[in-house]
Image 1 (cartoon, rainbow, N blue to C red):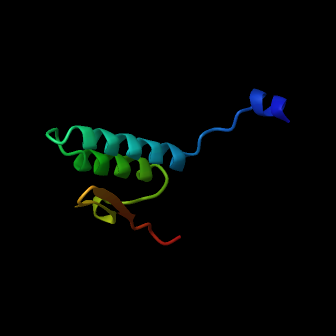
Image 2: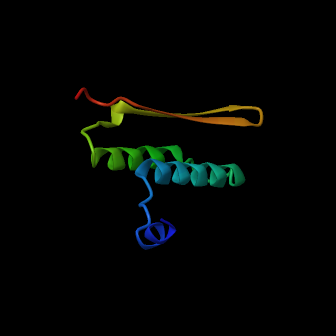
Length: 83
């Protein structure tokens, strides 16, 4: 089985890749507070990526970053159309 896994590695799922990108963006934002705000660029990129799979508009995706002391929460809310 290990040989098959080596010869045919599984592709990384898009959700995992998106999660890793978000973690990189947040880590970068934490180290560079004086830099530009990343939320507008993140919003545009999310619309672009989600639009590949389903029809969404800019109003269907809400992003907020809440700071409470040392804790930061990135909230992404996507309203998907009915099937």
